[in-house]
Amino acid sequence: MRCLPGFGARRSLVHRAGGDGELPNAEHHVGLAGHLELVCGLDSRRASILTHQSFRAPIHLSKPFHDAETLVVNVVNPTAGLLAGDRIVCEVKVQAGARLLLTTPSASRGHQMHGDYAKLVQRMHVADKGFLEFWPELFIPQKGTRYVQQTDLLVEAGGDLLFFESLAPGRVASGEAFAYGELLWSTDVVCDNVLIGRERYCLTPDGEAVRALRTAFPEAYYASGFVISERLQADSVWERIHALHRDDAWVGCSRLLDRGWAIKVVAAGSIALRRTLHHVRAELYVAMGHATPSLRRAGGL
Image (cartoon, rainbow, N blue to C red; front, side):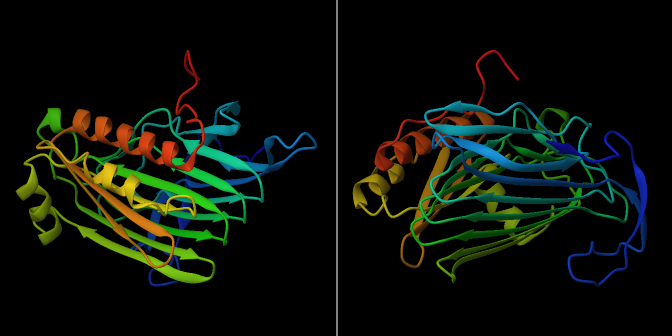
């Protein structure tokens, strides 16, 4: 394991606006430059292990463990959350035959930001016969959060990917539903060198997308997922997932090109969202014919 210097400290950074991968409107700002690098491969016993890991604040890792023949890694943010100017780059690679579940033990938070943004760049690569599940807890954008997220998912032919993210409307108990400043999310999904999915979100409190969410539920919670697997071709699994649609949680899934699917959930609250996602995940694992690894280590980290 290699933990780079700077853990727990904030440093001055300078960025020039308009460059590739730079933060919008970021001439000068203070923030953390964090990163996560993980490579999951096989050892001599054919067990999944981390063959490479590197991280820097605000990223930290718990001790990996095995469950259901899958390596489970919890990614922790030991700080209070994301602040203006924070930049994080995460690169995850799963090699042939390896199985990795990447999750978080608690929700992530974005705090009030003035003028500058926080930014997260995620790049995930799954090799042939590799398996990656990405299932973090909620992202909670608090009042005034300004956040940019860019995700690239690359899956080789024969690789499997379960990728889910969920978004809270804000600190609902504090009366901050949809009080964030701006959320810019982009996701590209490439399967066997073919772009099969592309999503772009621009969420602002008075924007059309947020109005659509609030039309469904006044304090709508949202989840987005991409599923890539040759073992999920049967219509029956998608019929069962469609059947999870309830009055307090709307569920939809659409086929992408070839072997991919997109799943969306809009729910009236966090409990309804969590319950629905739990059932979606269970259905997917049953259809893939594999035991379901735990998202949490029993007894905590």
